[in-house]
Image 1 (cartoon, one colour):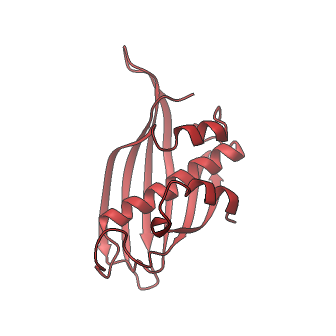
Image 2: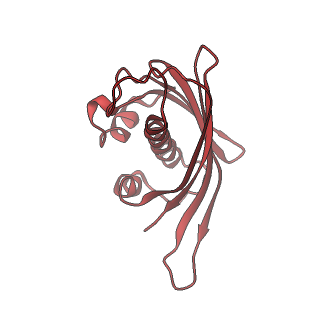
Amino acid sequence: MTDEPLLDRVLQPYKWHCRYLRSVEVTDQDGRSVARCEFAIPESCYIDDTGHLNSVEVNICYNQMMYYLVAKSVKEGWGSGFESWTLDDFWKHQLPDILIARFTSNFRRPVNPRAFSGEMEFRSVTRRAPAGGSPFLHADTAFRYWDADSGRCDGEATLAFVNVP
């Protein structure tokens, strides 16, 4: 069930017409947090209608899904690498310190942007401390999107959480 106040706060940095995430159900499966989401993109925020989900929108949806998943994991104290965080830590780090280091997406069949589902999971979250550098969290994630007409897209992203508490 969607934590509506949390979703509203997670989406606060986004312009109203770029808030695509509608609902989220998060589960903690064997120490791995998984989000299952519903999205709707009534109108693209940057281009004329392409008739399908495109790579920019995939990335925006991923960000919204990921931010909610991290915030919910922090709030619930789930073991996903963020056990020592508070929600105040998350709000402080949400925009400046959560970096997408690598992002790949594969479009299998066109996805209807007006109504589609998505899912993402943290495959691993590890603390790294490079020689001479500041420690950070390294996270490997996977995601996928689908619609009612067999549209499909999937991918992987590597995240770096810098300036971590």
